[in-house]
Length: 364
Image 1 (cartoon, rainbow, N blue to C red):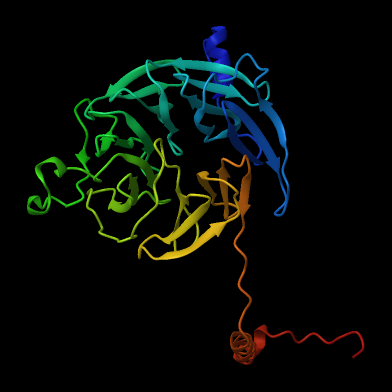
Image 2: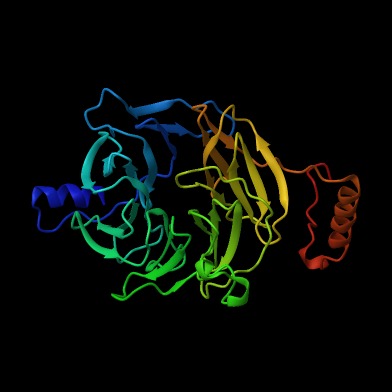
């Protein structure tokens, strides 16, 4: 995609096709308008920034950077958005913007689809109630989605369908959109599942009793998690919009901006990692049980991100640290070891003699 942008700016008729970059562990971090790229290969490490878009760069954001994301298919490019009302597409090698999008209000959140092949759209949430759709290929804002009545705090593409987008707003509502349709949203999440007897007139078709500032799909895209300033987290069926009524109890949510939480992928059972002060609360996704609290930061945790390939959790905080959390393998019990040994012996005895090792040793 970076080659495409460069070729388009140069006026080439047939821009370069996308090439996948080598798989490396690069982590993006933010610090007061600056962007750091960290690199590592080891499981236990202290990682230093290999490059930084710092105060001395004329391309640096003027105010706080709220969201940063790698281009899903190539770590040679990433996208950042800021309260300086801009979103920038960066070349990782030169640390210069290949494209800059400007908006009328502060940018709270942006997101690129992790699976899209037919489009290169970036969904952007700003202080404007309209969701902006920016096209990387044309370098322009091509469409807006209207339906919310307050600022858009979070946007997320579905990891299952590249045309499905979820948006969360300060109007207490979460809407699910099919961006192929010119009409309104597919549906609006209702915490009472349509039971008007349980809802006041103001709470009809609301996901939370307060600002909704967090969205996250599960890895398979079948469920959608939302968080609100009512200190509640809810799990929804992403296809029907039904509230599954899983009770997570009180979920700490002191963020006035987007709450950046995440869900584990590639493991069973699935867990939800939510910033909670200087700790990270870990919940069982489908039961709502509070499993544990991860403590290690010296100040408030701002964001959580899970890496499915390495089964690692990354957390960033106001203490200017990024911590990598690696699950420790559980030591087998003595009974389990004896059972495994007995099972192996039984399996060996039950093997057809034709497949047993009948070779004699050199000493024989």
